[in-house]
Image 1 (cartoon, rainbow, N blue to C red):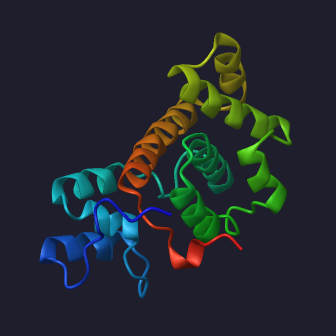
Image 2: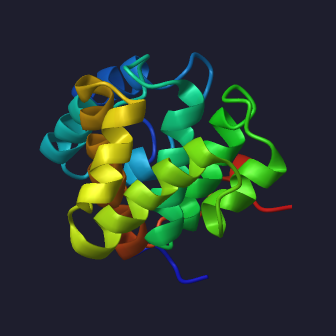
Image 3: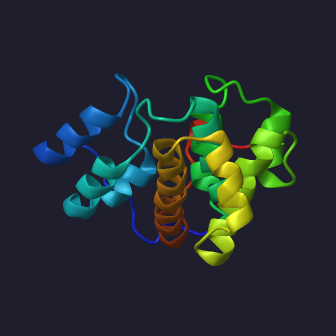
Length: 175
């Protein structure tokens, strides 16, 4: 593992940064290394926090996490994939097989559609008419937009984590 290119900030944080961390982190949990890295640019930190889609949305937690994990896998972002597996996989009801499917082939029709959507977006920055029709048969417009936005957002997160070489969180280390 390479050393981080931008060292995460350590506490104490500027009041505005601390306030941002307090809003996004669960009580008692230290800010993630990615967030402490982003804190070097309070503007970028604020804008990324404002754009996150981790609140209850139009799609299920399970669907959200499948899209995020597949996006991270396609971007080679072990950091963010590890965080989401550790913090959200159980609550999302993801099995080891579900998680493996985000790394390789999908296992169910619904999962296949979500993963194929991510793959097409990753490969071509669009999706085929056939996939669009399947999405329209399974999801409402607000849900489709959320799927598209999640994929784009986690590309950005992956780009930052990978380029800055953010070190894995201790709680998210592969076993």
